[in-house]
Length: 269
Ligand SMILES: NC(=O)C1=CN([C@@H]2O[C@H](COP(=O)(O)OP(=O)(O)OC[C@H]3O[C@@H](n4cnc5c(N)ncnc54)[C@H](O)[C@@H]3O)[C@@H](O)[C@H]2O)C=CC1
Ligand SMILES: O=C(O)[C@@H]1CCC=N1
Image (cartoon, rainbow, N blue to C red):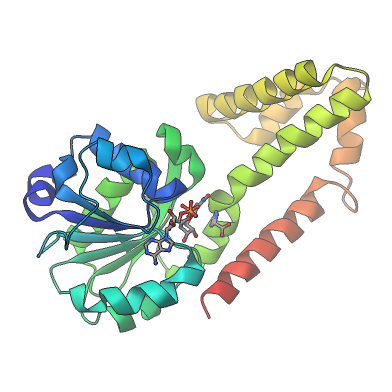
């Protein structure tokens, strides 16, 4: 992160909820001066002003970056009030699902715009974010966007904006699928007679451990699955249901991701 540049010109954060708040915490942890950040949000969380971040007044006159972290449905209200703040040397970085580079381009003519899709593990610095920029976003703008998002985890660059709705459906929404997996695994354990707290503890630790192993081994997940599965054993009996081509997880996940991606496309209209 080019801290000197950001600390000098400032950064405006519009929307400081779960995602905006996680980003702000990441930037402050990386050394961004609290006074260099100006937050616009009708419900700014108390900790923001307590950390010394600016929450009142007009904010910096010439910020280096405007970060948009409001709901896509709010963007129609927010963009007109900000559009005069655009400029060729001011990066607009948005984390909103669906809203297209073209829509930001209309609000901020000539400005470099980068869309980013993070996910909630950002709150503990373990997010993954995909970014893509408009034609005005050159190497410096993309590098700035990448370094801002890297404060909360890994960053990957997309080759084309058309990939963004699928990314949103996989990694943006994905944590919710995984949390639901924990819920359903725990409920199934309870149905087999385990106490609720033990079932939840086992399910949570299993998903966390398997996730860590998948990253650690950097191996094909199919191989990791096979290593759990003894011939004619318990896992094979379970997977016969989970991997059923008609009723198993694959067709369900296909429908899940397709519905999320379709919603992203709708939000962009
Ligand atoms: N929560 C998630 O898992 C992810 C969210 N996103 C995107 O992040 C954006 C924000 O989502 P969350 O942080 O989850 O929502 P949130 O509801 O936690 O935060 C939104 C914030 O915007 C504020 N706000 C509302 N109207 C405003 C206005 N007119 N001006 C300034 N601030 C205003 C709200 O007070 C709130 O603090 C969305 O566009 C979403 O698509 C992206 C990736 C993952
Ligand atoms: O549900 C949503 O629309 C946002 C985008 C990805 C995760 N949460």
